[in-house]
Image 1 (cartoon, rainbow, N blue to C red):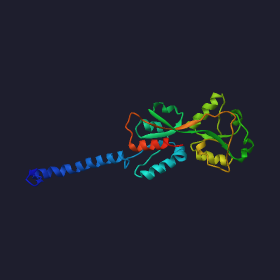
Image 2 (image 1 turned 180 degrees about the horizontal axis):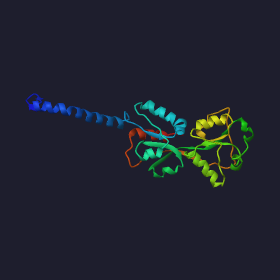
Image 3 (image 1 turned 45 degrees about the vertical axis):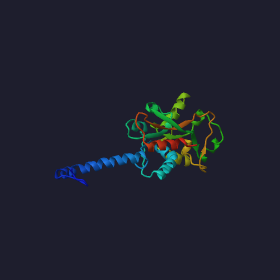
Image 4 (image 1 turned 135 degrees about the horizontal axis):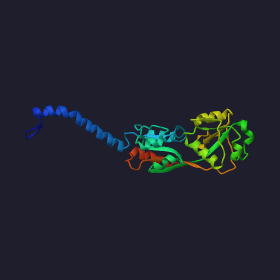
Length: 242
């Protein structure tokens, strides 16, 4: 620098150096501003892992409310939630519980209790209000998710505990398709109750004579990694669910 009593200016060598370092300084300043924005919920990313079913039937209103408050924050979904969480590819996951893969997740919070239900259309009207045990139920065609899902594993475990052989008529990867097939009378579908449309005129829930165990939706995140303000806000919004 050349200093005088009223000002400071660059020397010719300073001008040359400034041309080289100016882009780097601007990049550093931009990065610092993005970090500050993310911590203030004005920018950054919120990466969510959830199954298609949970995302559609449970998370949509929370994502909508979150997006209205913080439109610059986006989310992603995946069926391999726990793997993505362990690999640091998502900030949090929302999944069914019990889930044996969750043993490696440091922080788990329950956000909702739910029941699984069997649904059918009027072709099975004779079963309406008739309490069924599992032996009777398995005499009918069962529609359920494929074996890669926690919901399918849950039902298979219940049948194994009763020494019953569950052989589904149809296995699919979508609860939407199961509901559609139940609606046309192809069989009795097994789905989480939060997937069942309200007051559906074509479908009814079957009554079981045995107490059916409830499950939970939980949010999980890695307590060994720093969690963003956006993720904290979203987790708290789920915990406020009544």
